Image (cartoon, rainbow over all chains, first blue to last red; front, top):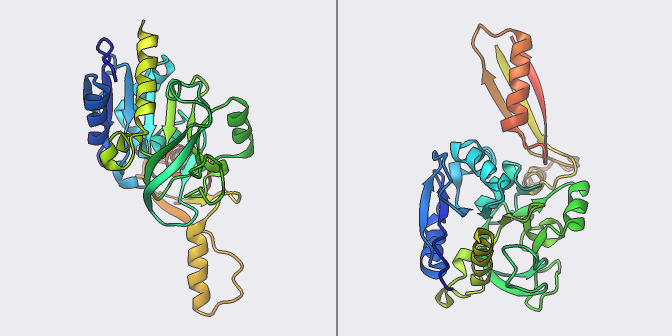
Length: 239
Length: 81
């Protein structure tokens, strides 16, 4: 990925976050941009163009996954950051935190089959018109690993209708040919939803881990498409 | 003053843990159980300066803002003087 002028990324770290180093590594090595770890007590995000809320078990998943992280001082800054149109990318626990914080609608609950599932799945790009998917096409199938026990996306009917009408569903679990089927749904998520964005499309949450799919050595580098799209979007927004 | 908060999943939300518990209970021989759903129980202890009205208000706010996720859960507050 080519380096545009410096666009600093931040990776937020809560007590219990454990996928922060993978996200840092991808931005540093594959995206090739400066990146900082941001401790959850930080309240100044003015240096950044995008922040990533990484996966892990923030606050031990106590009460509910992501429920306590949203009260950390950094989250007020993240809300303002998102409101100003900058990019907030929540991965796995990050998606859970964004839903708990009200930056994305709905909630992630226990996998329908109860098991923690750790494996590569295939997801279908449902909306190519987001800053995170503009280098993909609708229908593009990505192989990305999941590792979660609370990845079952749920919402009420009114929210679901709004998500569909506003094209906020960005990724769905699918089979290898790109067909969205019950069998390809690992956790019972409503309508096979794997990732959604907000109305303004600058905030994205997804349960799969694209930061673990940027090197062939790890089984897939399909995740690069998402980071490339995001980087290009930041560059476009900055100019 | 103590506030007891009961947090339960909305009826429309899938509860696979409740179902697993139900199956285990059936192994004990209870065939008449039609469903089990799991919830959470919290006790909030408040100091003596707080009266019952204030305790209820505080507990309701804590329940709504922290203890329950309104997307998937309902809550109920009981005050114990």
